[in-house]
Length: 281
Image (cartoon, rainbow, N blue to C red; front, side, top):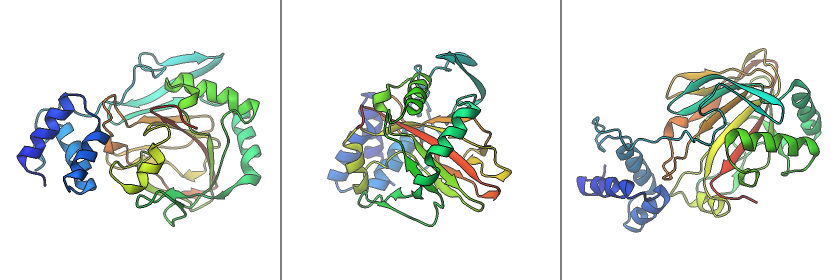
């Protein structure tokens, strides 16, 4: 663990409003392992000394954005489309939403993507290359922003819902899990300090938030789980699961570790929207 001098340095820089990325860069230059640097920043920011003792939590990660459309209400209408808050966690910043997509929209996205699926990949943290791995057993495809009128309409809705411009969003990704398919726990953000992350944050910056939309009802299993907080959301057609993991100062919330549980019966179709801190693409 880092000594008290480094912990004081981290506290001082957090209070000054320095970003996590800038602090990790300095620490790497001082020959500190990037994983240790990130862990130390997270622990200090959560108000704990690096030895794990409890302390002042005033610098803990707060990822709820006032721009999120349901930040102060339980229901919102966007271009005539009603979306309702079902459940919310304060930390991590998670919201279960009803009515993000209509039944017709869900069916249309499945139809449009069914014959365009390829094996899903993940970003290798060592070099940033997309690779297939056994812990992610799904097929997927991406829509370009504005590719069809349906895509454009939904992207405008999601931008207003998430409180981020359309230009900050990555293309919509549709994923298909067959029986037994899963995605083991992972983070959606790019780990600071990892060589492979650099190439992905150069354009658009870090990911800030995710919205998962469920395109079908799943017979059994297939929930999205947050293992560190004991919370699981099970799929229902048209429902959305929103979670944010980057705060205004650039701190990333490790409690957003999440995974797709195995599909016990049937199949699962979902669509994902990721948003960045700056315009993307």
